[in-house]
Image (cartoon, rainbow over all chains, first blue to last red; front, side, top):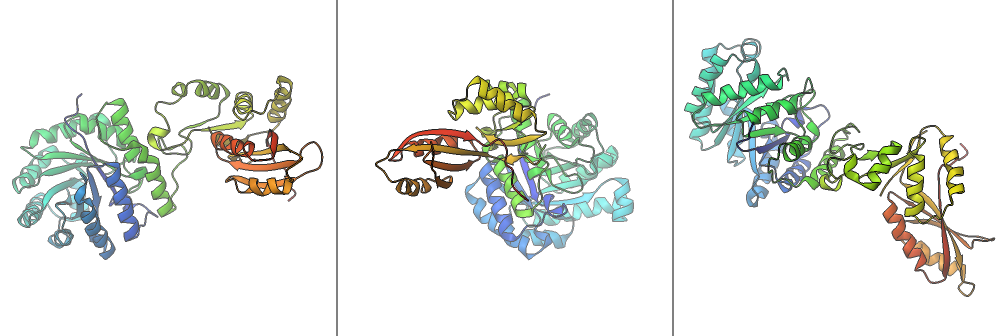
Length: 363
Length: 86
């Protein structure tokens, strides 16, 4: 299936900050925001409603985003008071959210369908009256009955919302189900465009988001390292690389900045990524198996689908009982150690006698 | 056993007799990446300890060592494992 267009929205400064231990100062938010702008995402989402620090960061990002294609989108609840805070930040784009599933309406909002539609219409109208471009998020959309979703979209589109976010709030969809949901939603719309916001509770956030894009959505929500509520959402790095490499979407993203950006978030928060994290993880280009190493040293593509340089990561080789022979031979030549075959055999025997990995190095 | 990060090598050097080894050692220490320099008796005159994350960086350092006035010949020894008293 074809993609119409793909915009990338990074919500590290909103969704990401809802994760445990992801706490950022105003200065760090600005640094991350500028780095996201530099890497080339289309939207940076931030939540000024959390406090004065966030308002300051939003205003500063707006000022620095003037010369960039990246737009800042300020996120709040579907309340006039929240919209007033977004307006205070001088943003062009605002985003408000309201639950649309029966479960959420009954247990969280304590409103019936008519009450939810009324609040949606009033808040969108209020935001539009005050000049904001607006995205309206239908929270828990995947567990929302399509007939109610159709009514909701008619109301918010009628009130002037430019974008509508379809969410898999608890990560409870398959890619097929989510794609069908997006396709149906697109059929309800007249002119607004669709965002996809998928949670990773069952590890399907990225396939779901891609399925949404293939079915007519035009903007995907991501965070650095995939941080977010519970198991998070798709990571910026995985989303960008999958879309570029496998689906040939011509995203204008500086992929060589992906690992430095991941490391920046780790440095600011102390929350380390899993070493097995694709693209940016410590193990993403770490080769250990003997036959793998020989092949990688001869032609890296044998065991790498893209180069570490292309994503700002580093290739590392591990010397240990599994990989002694090939690595030692390589180092002998690369460092000009002039070890004879007999010496190599002797040292290999020593290495094999040790359990585990001795050291790793970069080329 | 915890895996060490980076390469740890010793570079043994034979120096020319006319240049004092202390003078060579001082120049070597100014090369970024060189951890320590030992003056020795025996076949080698100087032993240089180098730690670096990458092979290419070690090669850069080796070239700088070989270009140092008074260095006649070098041999590289790779540290496979380290044993220290607790």
